[in-house]
Amino acid sequence: MEFNPSKYDIGRSYDWNYDNVPDPAQIEIPEIGGEWKFCGKPVESPLGMSAGPLLNGRWILYYASLGFDVLTYKTVRSRSRDCYPLPNLQPVATDQLRGTETDLPAIDDMSGSWAVSFGMPSKPPAEWRADVEWTRNQLAPEKLLCVSVVGSIQPDWSLDQLADDYALCAKWAVESGADCVETNFSCPNVATCDGQLYQEPNSAQLVTARVREAIGSTPYIIKVGHVSERDAAEQLLESVVPFVDAIAATNSVAATVRGLDGKPLFDGQCRGICGDATRTASTEQIRLFAEIRDQRGWNVSLIGVGGAGTVQHVRDYLAAGAEAVHIATAAMVDPTVAVKIRRDW
Ligand SMILES: Cc1cc2nc3c(=O)[nH]c(=O)nc-3n(C[C@H](O)[C@H](O)[C@H](O)COP(=O)(O)O)c2cc1C
Image (cartoon, rainbow, N blue to C red; front, side, top):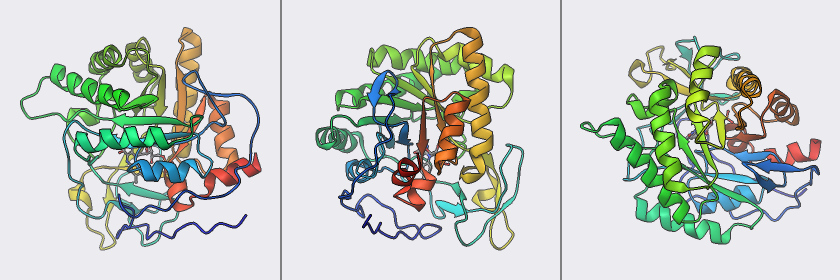
C-alpha cells in the first residue's frame, strides 16, 4: 500500500485545525465481510470515528476514505464557542485507568493516552449547518454521517431550556442531512450540568425525550461518561432507553493532571483522559450495560469507545456486547488504523 499520511504535530502545540485537512486518500480498503448494522442501518464494518477529531466535512471525507463507515461530526452548539487555551492535548503517563486516579504526570511525547481539553468549541450554527449539508452531499451514500450536539447552558437557564437547546441543535443537524444524531451527555472538561447529564438520570430523561420529539425516527445516540456501578448504570439506562437507539461509552475517564514542572495543570480541574488507558474501563462498561440490557430485555445498541486501535480491541468490544466500535485517539495518531484493522480482520 503506497500511502503517506500527513504528519501532524500531535501534543501541546497542536496542528490539527479546520483548514489543514488532507485530501481523501486514493487507496484500496480491505473488505471484512459479514453483516454490520449501525442503529438499524446497514454499514460495511463496525468501525466509526467518534466525536472530536472530525472538525468539518473535509475531515470527514478524509477519514471516510480511510476505511471508517460511521463518521461523527465534532460536537456543535446552538451558538459559537471558543476553544480552551493550550494545551488542548496533553500526553500523560498512565496504566489502564479505573476512574479513581489523580495527578497523572504529563509527558512530552504521546505514548497512547492524553488529557483532552477543548471545552467543545463550536462554529456558529449557520456555518456548521451548511457544512453538514455539504458533507452529506459529498459523502458516499453507504457511509453514515452522525452529528454530535451539546446544549449550551446559560447562567439563568432551567433544565427545560437546556433540553430545548439540545433539541434545537439536533433538529438542525437532521434538517441539514445528518443520518444520525448524538447528544453528548459527558464532558469532564465542562463544569456545568450539560457536562454531567449522564450522572443525572431524571435530567437525562427529560433531554432525551425532548430530542426524540424534535428528530422523529432519526437514529439517536447518547454519549455518556464512565459508569462502573450497576445501580447507576441501571438507573441511567432505564431513564433513557425509551427514547434512544444507542448509547456510546465511554467519552473518557476523568482525572487531574500534573504538568512537566510538577504543578497542577488545568487549574487543578479534571480533564477527560482519552486513548489507550481507557480501554479496560470502557470495555467493562459496555459489558455491564449489555448485561443489564439483556436481563431487562431492552432494545438499545451499544457503541464501544475508548482506547481501541487493533483488531483485538474491536473484537473485545463486540464480544462485550457492542454493535460498533468508534475510535478517536488511535485514528489521529495513525490515520491508517482502520485500514490496518480491516487488513488484520
Ligand atoms: C481531539 C479530541 C477531541 C474530542 N472532542 C470531543 C467532542 O467534541 N465531543 C465528544 O463527545 N467527545 C470528544 N472527544 C472524545 C472522543 O470522542 C472519545 O470519546 C474519546 O477520545 C475516547 O476514544 P479514544 O480513546 O479512541 O480517543 C474528543 C477526543 C479527542 C481525542
